[in-house]
Length: 264
Image (cartoon, rainbow, N blue to C red; front, side, top):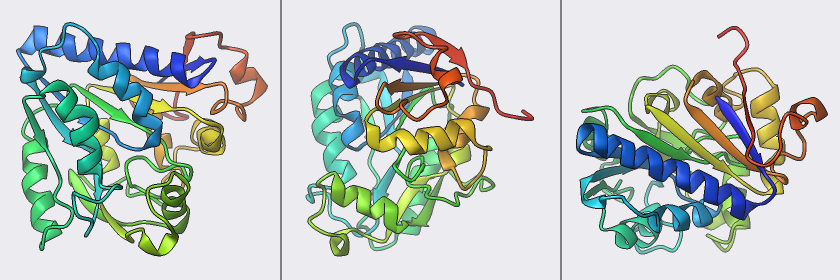
């Protein structure tokens, strides 16, 4: 994994969006199409704004999947990730095909079986991800399942994760946040050829420190990104603020260095 630190969220988002656009253009040039995974959440706003305005992408040749969705939440709810992606990605680009997870379907297991088959049918060119305040990747809260090969799984959301959703303004209080979600599995995320992880804001600083400086462990789900040679973690000075002084000194604006995984 490579690590890049920027002065603020805007410069971070610009660089990450340009990298994501470059990966999509390269896939279309090489293979005639691109397959992407898109993240949601407040941390992705500026990044997606840059990406959707990028020049030179034939979005009709792009096929998309999303990382996760709440179980039981209708697509009309303000917190629905389907609603987020329709408004901030699909409608902005005219993307050729996007596989939306119907989290409020009567049989969520059947939904993930069908979408999982589509996802696993061919390699993913680039995945866009974030890191939660509790260190989750997608909705894989600690301790995450680092073993399953299933493309999507049904997970139970822990309280810190649910409180983050309230804190970001998606729900009025904790009682309204669903307790279960459909999530792409960690090993499935790692199958993407390239991963662009967009992680701004001071509230993510402890999770970033744990995932980068601790052991690779299900207790720190996003630490698994360190196993991917072409994952790039984009931080701003706020989200990088708790990293060790020696690690921070390695970076200027947009500079990068490998962050390896012990024993891998």
